[in-house]
Length: 101
Image 1 (cartoon, rainbow, N blue to C red):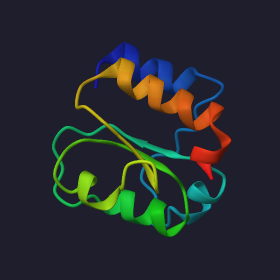
Image 2: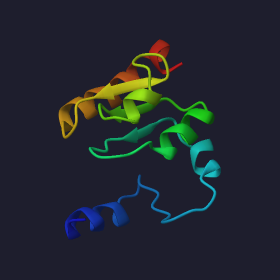
Image 3: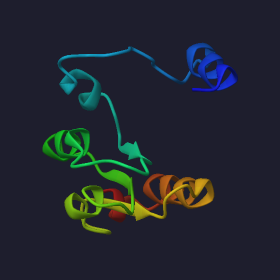
Image 4: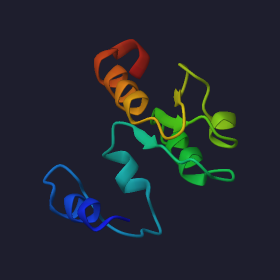
């Protein structure tokens, strides 16, 4: 990870960086959604875990992720390495209450 990115994550007041956790349920419980913009993943457990906690997920259009998330039903699928599409998907979940629910 780029040092500037790591510093931003560690210092930003709206980012809760907790490191590795064996039990992620408490963190999913306080979350509104999962953004998982991976571009190479097998079958992502974190997306399944978030879904089990009924969190909408924003995932990249890659194998595994696009098999778990059904566009518009339990989350949104964005193209890989597309920051603008990821941002727009986040905005949609914030602004479209029906989509979020």
